[in-house]
Length: 301
Image (cartoon, rainbow, N blue to C red):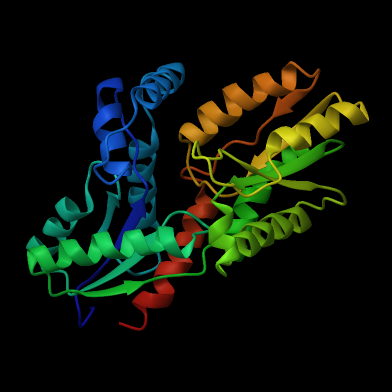
């Protein structure tokens, strides 16, 4: 019996589930600044191309359910909540449930394996603001260490290995503005570290690393770009390769559109076939990684 009522909260970026959600979603992502018409149209077309909306919300719910089941199986039957930074269920809505259910200690896990300080800071501010608005008294414990957890590495390697044999592999992470790295952020180190660990676990002797999904702003974004790596493969005479994203733990627009449609087409026009491992989603090995990270904090409660 727990002396203190504890629970876990999974946090994800959020994504629109329907085409009509795209505009309000962009409004939230941009902090209330109006999105240019061209951007709104572009994003609606992209979400239309992947079926009319993102599966991220449904997949995050499945991850939360699977984690609750895993924790219960390890002797910790407790609630696992989930919330989105930029969409429903909003952080404040979910923390209202936490308060109503009288949780006293909440373990918070951000589902992006690598985080810039700026991005992580936004999660902290959203949670802390909601906590203040609601008068939530629960202790918040921010769990860390996902990017290099052995079971996360194992989960990525499990998905990659069936495709990797005899093929060139390029690992990708979501690009960020160069100014963040120049300011001392260790995001690049974390992303490359995850890739190196997965490559070693999968037994790869040769592999590459690149950044995908650069923003549309005029500032410099972290590279090398995936497109430049694909161009190099074409010049080397390769005919196929594997692109393995390591900064997403569930299918989202950056996977289903940026990789499966845009980058696959870019490669095809240069005579290459792009293969991609399945996303982790509710992979049992990935859920075990989340359970380990949660338990490390729960046991201190």
